[in-house]
Image (cartoon, rainbow over all chains, first blue to last red; front, side, top):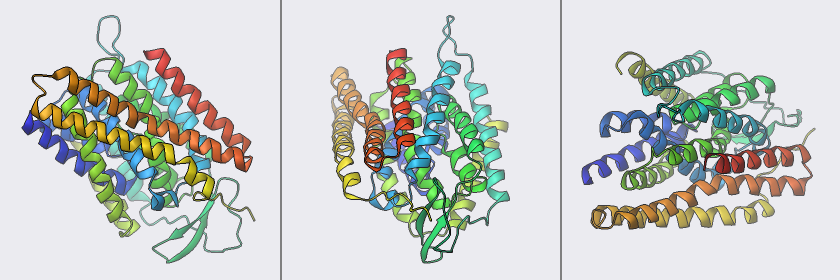
Amino acid sequence: MLESALITILAGVGAGSLGALLGLGGGVFLVPMLDILVGLPFRTAAGISLLTVIATSSFVSLDNNSRRYVNTRLAMLLLTHTVLGASLGRLLVAPGPDGRPLLSDVVSGRIFGVTALVVALVMLHRLRRRNIIRDPLASVGVLGSRIHDPDSGGAVGYRVSRLPLALGLALVAGAISTVVGVGGGILLVPALNSWCGVPMRAAAATSVLMIGVTAVPGAIGHYVDNYLTMPGLEASAVLGVLAGSRLGFWVGARSRVLYLKLLMAVILTSVGVFYLFFR
Amino acid sequence: MTTPPSTTNGSDSRARVLPRATLLAGTSLLGAGWVVALTVGQTWPTVTRVLVDLGLAAVVSVPILNVVAIMTVEWQRRGRLFVLAAAAVLLMLVANVFWWT
């Protein structure tokens, strides 16, 4: 028990720091760690991961520095779709009359792998896209905003484009969140940044606020279905992730966006290849 | 020119007091549960489960309180569309709780 708890805490610190750094919640890193290092079944790892996603989101979204970049109006519109998607995704993993879910652990793992690889490719394709408007008089529209851009050292604006596409992807992100135990940030951050005109820091901060809410239906479902039966490990993971979130947020405020995108693409590719070919 | 919504005004800060307090309470309960699990968890498994469950319930309620806080701020700004969106999100979350439990 002690060994598993310590490994889980360390995995939580790693996942929490990467999650807060990249706006993903950490689930995409924690699920493989719990699955491979601690040896938990995929569904249990996914359930614990959803709890940690909520913890990361809660911690980071209450931080004053992070909130400067959050676009709450865009988040509210997208949340209507991510929460609906998460509720529908619940139907895919709830045990059926024979006690087995519609999607097996293997299929869930494959979906996880494909999602991670696709998102990594999108990130790499649009690595140098900045999405910022330097003109202080330019309109940012109803959903756009103005933020401080540490890379250019001043205030910049951005407009939100392709809202219908963002809403559609939010629905898919919500469903994937429940199925594979992530917050949906692995889809939301690249989509908002690459296709909808939102700068990386604003996309990450907005995503962090959203993923906590999106993960709630999945976390409740996993609890009700008795996938969460190890309170010691659950507490270890959440406490580790909370500690890691603080570290990741501190590093994120001092890092260049290009490096954050590269790091995210490398990690997603590794996770995707593992779940598709070695699991 | 459209003025971007501020996220750090006074009413917003006041609306965040409850989520902050809830997160602190949840973390404390989880910490206590973790210590109990590693020390006397084998003897008193129910105590561990109760402490961790209460801690998790507090942590899980923070995003819901965040949505309520945003809804309050948008209500004051008269952003009706966003108040409606927040209400829809809350309704779906509550429906989830009752549907699955």
